[in-house]
Length: 363
Image (cartoon, rainbow, N blue to C red; front, side, top):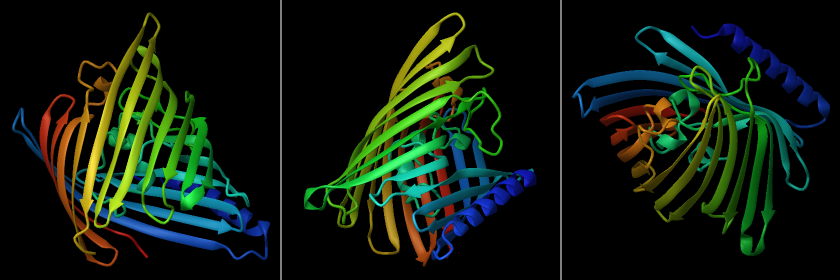
């Protein structure tokens, strides 16, 4: 069952905040945007080792609301997911929730729940569904609820600033600090501002982007994340994790190339001894826009992480290698069908995956 009490709590706080922002400047003309992004997925998997087949239908609904009143900003994103249609279970998640202020100089200060300034995929495609070109994201960019091996969210403060440089280029900096995730023995769980619980520790991130031409969709950047992750129900008590990485995105007319590489250092602390666990992960994707309706794409992913890693052993769906091929069909305005095949090497098995997805954005 969806947690109705939790949903009502989010709604009440949001209404109060919207009213407060709207009343700050009575003569201001608020700018609002409300987006609805439903999707339906089918994923079929075949294990190479056992020859077993499994298929799963699931549906989700992503709701986004943004409000700007003069220089005040408010944003919330709620995701409702049918996690298992066979037994009727479902879930509601507050994905992002923040408010803040943009100064006249272009610095934006936000307080609340947002994504870490990490990588490229989740920054470019904040809300997945219709916006991202493929069905499956890169494994290293998976969200916590998807069994991802890296923290993605933080609750605290985020500061961003863009500097215009010579010849229409620009430098963009984002930094965040706040309460991060914890590992409950099964998966990472981010700090929830409406159901905070206990045990979270600080996470901080820094992302630096260079845009050679602000009129073009091209950028290159680096990022750094420092996570302190409490660990429950295992012999370890904490992971002092550092993530270093770089990324690029470039367009060549109809062809788009983009990639990211992560270097992860884990210092796992236990009562008797500590263990260091290091690995890297990288992905490269290419999209080719044939016309406004058809977009074939392919992606390769690779990591040197393996089952002997004490950290990755907790994430059996960690992607070691993947070769993915897909086709996106924008059949009518704001509707898309995607067809995808992936040969994936997880931590302990190889699998062939076939997926189909319908998604849309409204309005």
